[in-house]
Image 1 (cartoon, one colour):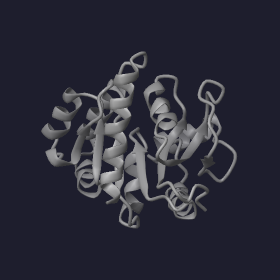
Image 2 (tube, helix red, strand yellow):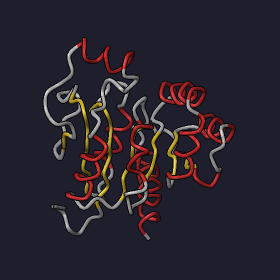
Image 3 (tube, one colour):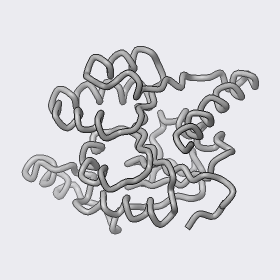
Length: 209
Protein backbone atom coordinates (compact mmCIF):
# COMPACT_ATOMS: atom_id res chain seq x y z
CA UNK A 1 0.00 0.00 0.00
CA UNK A 2 2.75 2.41 -0.93
CA UNK A 3 1.50 5.97 -1.35
CA UNK A 4 4.45 7.58 -3.13
CA UNK A 5 5.02 5.23 -6.02
CA UNK A 6 7.97 7.17 -7.38
CA UNK A 7 9.96 6.69 -4.16
CA UNK A 8 11.40 3.47 -2.70
CA UNK A 9 9.81 2.49 0.60
CA UNK A 10 12.01 2.32 3.71
CA UNK A 11 10.41 0.72 6.75
CA UNK A 12 11.73 1.51 10.22
CA UNK A 13 10.80 -0.68 13.18
CA UNK A 14 11.29 0.64 16.70
CA UNK A 15 9.73 -0.85 19.84
CA UNK A 16 9.11 2.66 21.19
CA UNK A 17 8.30 5.63 19.00
CA UNK A 18 10.24 7.56 20.08
CA UNK A 19 12.62 7.74 23.03
CA UNK A 20 13.86 11.27 23.88
CA UNK A 21 17.48 10.32 23.16
CA UNK A 22 16.59 9.18 19.62
CA UNK A 23 16.84 12.67 18.16
CA UNK A 24 19.32 11.60 15.47
CA UNK A 25 16.98 8.88 14.29
CA UNK A 26 14.19 11.44 13.98
CA UNK A 27 16.49 13.70 11.97
CA UNK A 28 17.22 10.76 9.68
CA UNK A 29 13.51 10.07 9.19
CA UNK A 30 12.57 13.61 8.24
CA UNK A 31 15.77 14.24 6.28
CA UNK A 32 15.64 11.26 3.90
CA UNK A 33 13.61 13.02 1.23
CA UNK A 34 14.32 10.46 -1.48
CA UNK A 35 12.41 7.73 0.37
CA UNK A 36 8.90 7.07 1.50
CA UNK A 37 9.26 6.09 5.15
CA UNK A 38 6.83 3.92 7.10
CA UNK A 39 7.31 3.58 10.87
CA UNK A 40 6.26 0.45 12.76
CA UNK A 41 6.12 0.54 16.56
CA UNK A 42 4.80 -1.19 19.66
CA UNK A 43 4.58 1.70 22.11
CA UNK A 44 3.74 5.27 21.09
CA UNK A 45 5.49 7.95 23.17
CA UNK A 46 6.69 11.55 22.79
CA UNK A 47 4.66 12.16 19.63
CA UNK A 48 4.51 15.89 20.35
CA UNK A 49 8.32 15.97 20.49
CA UNK A 50 8.64 13.86 17.33
CA UNK A 51 5.55 14.53 15.17
CA UNK A 52 5.22 12.25 12.17
CA UNK A 53 2.68 10.64 9.92
CA UNK A 54 2.87 7.08 8.57
CA UNK A 55 2.97 5.48 12.03
CA UNK A 56 1.71 1.90 12.27
CA UNK A 57 1.11 -0.05 15.48
CA UNK A 58 2.03 -3.73 15.39
CA UNK A 59 0.42 -4.68 18.70
CA UNK A 60 -3.05 -6.24 18.93
CA UNK A 61 -4.36 -3.40 21.05
CA UNK A 62 -4.22 -2.52 24.71
CA UNK A 63 -1.15 -2.66 26.92
CA UNK A 64 0.21 -5.02 29.51
CA UNK A 65 -0.39 -4.10 33.12
CA UNK A 66 2.35 -4.14 35.71
CA UNK A 67 1.57 -7.64 37.00
CA UNK A 68 1.47 -9.10 33.47
CA UNK A 69 4.81 -7.47 32.66
CA UNK A 70 6.39 -9.06 35.73
CA UNK A 71 4.79 -12.41 34.89
CA UNK A 72 6.13 -12.36 31.32
CA UNK A 73 9.60 -11.15 32.29
CA UNK A 74 10.36 -13.25 35.37
CA UNK A 75 8.11 -16.31 35.21
CA UNK A 76 7.61 -16.93 31.50
CA UNK A 77 11.08 -15.55 30.63
CA UNK A 78 9.56 -13.55 27.77
CA UNK A 79 10.03 -9.96 26.69
CA UNK A 80 7.48 -7.93 28.68
CA UNK A 81 6.88 -5.54 25.77
CA UNK A 82 6.64 -8.05 22.95
CA UNK A 83 3.47 -10.00 22.28
CA UNK A 84 3.95 -13.56 21.04
CA UNK A 85 2.49 -12.78 17.64
CA UNK A 86 3.99 -9.31 17.28
CA UNK A 87 6.73 -10.57 14.88
CA UNK A 88 4.10 -11.91 12.49
CA UNK A 89 2.24 -8.61 12.68
CA UNK A 90 5.42 -6.78 11.69
CA UNK A 91 5.92 -9.15 8.77
CA UNK A 92 2.34 -8.60 7.61
CA UNK A 93 2.57 -4.82 7.87
CA UNK A 94 5.88 -4.72 6.02
CA UNK A 95 4.30 -6.67 3.18
CA UNK A 96 1.12 -4.58 3.23
CA UNK A 97 3.05 -1.31 2.85
CA UNK A 98 5.32 -2.78 0.16
CA UNK A 99 8.46 -2.02 2.16
CA UNK A 100 11.64 -2.55 0.14
CA UNK A 101 14.15 -2.05 2.96
CA UNK A 102 13.56 -2.68 6.66
CA UNK A 103 15.65 -0.98 9.34
CA UNK A 104 15.31 -2.39 12.85
CA UNK A 105 16.35 -0.19 15.78
CA UNK A 106 18.19 -2.50 18.15
CA UNK A 107 16.83 -2.92 21.67
CA UNK A 108 16.28 -5.67 24.23
CA UNK A 109 13.47 -7.20 22.12
CA UNK A 110 15.30 -7.44 18.80
CA UNK A 111 16.33 -11.09 19.15
CA UNK A 112 12.66 -12.05 19.42
CA UNK A 113 12.30 -11.02 15.78
CA UNK A 114 14.78 -13.66 14.61
CA UNK A 115 11.86 -16.05 14.24
CA UNK A 116 10.69 -14.18 11.14
CA UNK A 117 13.98 -12.98 9.63
CA UNK A 118 14.12 -15.80 7.11
CA UNK A 119 10.63 -14.88 5.89
CA UNK A 120 11.72 -11.48 4.64
CA UNK A 121 12.85 -11.18 1.02
CA UNK A 122 14.18 -7.65 1.48
CA UNK A 123 17.41 -6.24 2.99
CA UNK A 124 17.36 -6.11 6.81
CA UNK A 125 19.37 -3.38 8.52
CA UNK A 126 20.09 -3.25 12.24
CA UNK A 127 20.62 0.26 13.61
CA UNK A 128 22.59 0.71 16.83
CA UNK A 129 21.45 4.22 17.50
CA UNK A 130 23.72 5.50 20.28
CA UNK A 131 26.19 4.59 23.02
CA UNK A 132 23.40 3.41 25.33
CA UNK A 133 22.17 0.94 22.70
CA UNK A 134 25.78 -0.17 22.07
CA UNK A 135 26.15 -0.92 25.78
CA UNK A 136 22.86 -2.83 25.68
CA UNK A 137 24.12 -4.81 22.68
CA UNK A 138 27.20 -5.87 24.67
CA UNK A 139 25.01 -6.97 27.57
CA UNK A 140 22.70 -8.96 25.30
CA UNK A 141 25.73 -10.52 23.58
CA UNK A 142 27.09 -11.79 26.90
CA UNK A 143 23.77 -13.52 27.64
CA UNK A 144 22.87 -14.68 24.14
CA UNK A 145 25.94 -15.29 22.01
CA UNK A 146 24.30 -17.87 19.75
CA UNK A 147 21.26 -15.70 18.87
CA UNK A 148 23.56 -12.73 18.30
CA UNK A 149 25.59 -14.86 15.91
CA UNK A 150 22.35 -15.61 14.05
CA UNK A 151 21.60 -11.88 13.97
CA UNK A 152 25.02 -11.23 12.40
CA UNK A 153 24.35 -13.93 9.81
CA UNK A 154 20.79 -13.04 8.87
CA UNK A 155 21.07 -9.24 8.84
CA UNK A 156 22.16 -7.51 5.66
CA UNK A 157 23.92 -4.60 7.35
CA UNK A 158 24.53 -2.94 10.70
CA UNK A 159 24.38 0.85 10.88
CA UNK A 160 26.43 2.48 13.64
CA UNK A 161 27.38 6.06 14.49
CA UNK A 162 31.03 5.63 15.50
CA UNK A 163 34.19 3.63 14.83
CA UNK A 164 34.14 2.46 18.46
CA UNK A 165 30.81 0.70 17.99
CA UNK A 166 32.02 -0.83 14.73
CA UNK A 167 35.09 -2.20 16.52
CA UNK A 168 32.85 -3.68 19.22
CA UNK A 169 30.73 -5.52 16.64
CA UNK A 170 33.80 -6.88 14.88
CA UNK A 171 35.18 -8.14 18.21
CA UNK A 172 31.89 -9.97 18.79
CA UNK A 173 32.04 -11.68 15.43
CA UNK A 174 30.20 -9.42 13.01
CA UNK A 175 31.78 -9.46 9.53
CA UNK A 176 33.44 -6.12 8.89
CA UNK A 177 31.87 -5.78 5.43
CA UNK A 178 28.41 -5.78 7.04
CA UNK A 179 29.01 -2.64 9.12
CA UNK A 180 28.41 0.89 7.87
CA UNK A 181 29.36 3.97 9.90
CA UNK A 182 26.96 6.84 9.36
CA UNK A 183 28.59 9.23 11.81
CA UNK A 184 26.94 12.26 13.41
CA UNK A 185 26.63 15.60 11.64
CA UNK A 186 26.47 19.24 12.62
CA UNK A 187 22.85 20.31 12.18
CA UNK A 188 23.91 23.97 11.98
CA UNK A 189 26.21 23.40 8.98
CA UNK A 190 24.17 22.92 5.83
CA UNK A 191 27.14 21.47 3.93
CA UNK A 192 27.73 18.93 6.69
CA UNK A 193 24.04 18.04 6.77
CA UNK A 194 23.83 17.67 2.98
CA UNK A 195 26.91 15.43 2.90
CA UNK A 196 25.48 13.22 5.68
CA UNK A 197 22.13 12.66 3.97
CA UNK A 198 23.77 12.12 0.61
CA UNK A 199 25.89 9.32 2.12
CA UNK A 200 22.91 7.81 3.93
CA UNK A 201 20.66 7.94 0.86
CA UNK A 202 23.40 6.40 -1.28
CA UNK A 203 23.82 3.58 1.25
CA UNK A 204 20.10 2.72 1.13
CA UNK A 205 19.92 3.10 -2.66
CA UNK A 206 22.89 0.74 -3.15
CA UNK A 207 21.04 -1.95 -1.18
CA UNK A 208 18.19 -1.72 -3.69
CA UNK A 209 20.36 -1.88 -6.77
